[in-house]
Length: 328
Image (tube, rainbow, N blue to C red):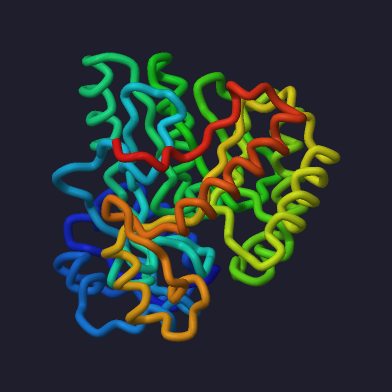
């Protein structure tokens, strides 16, 4: 993606990563700003319009950079589960994405002070092994050509054997680096869901082909059937898809798989509805349980158990992780 405007925070100007990124943005108009929130947090922004042509903002992330994993996210049995956001927002435009309710803007913020993230990780590692999901609030692999941040997280994992990094993506990279303590988590969806709700995203088969290449290269690969989206014929859609995935990827060589239905905090859903008046996803009549908007409990359970049963034909049950619907 080409950016017509790049906003550069005062504190970010002298960081090497800023210069690296600016060299790749061509003839974009570069605008200095005092603080990234002066642009990102402006009131009355049209997030839907911005998504068609987002601006790029280069900034310094101060304060907290590594956070405890949220209850709506899966920990995969990891005790010290954290996530980190070195980029805010994503190149892709999935209708169900919680970022549409989380942020006031669709502009993309890249934090250029990765050295501080490295220091934060080192401090946490002093307390014990660490599992960090580094690509929840963005898609670092999709943006790697611009930022190089997926590579930097991979290099950080190589430095620390007690650090396990997950890089989640909907991209279809040609090649990924085989690092023992990096997990490449590919979010995959049936074509019926992808074409309807996942704008600007590589096709289901392109993603599966990329995951298969990563498996063949010896990488740790996780497939994420998450979020499952409710449709009138969801059993048929996801049943055929599970068989299709198994025809393209050797499940025995996967690290694990995850299953989860669409869910979002009630606050984020409220924000989504304000800007997405015609969205089927945003305006479904969800139920609220423990502050999270979800499908009806029976529907949620049936969908997850159905997919779990399909996947159990191809991979050991202990490698199938479903989102915990019960309070934590």
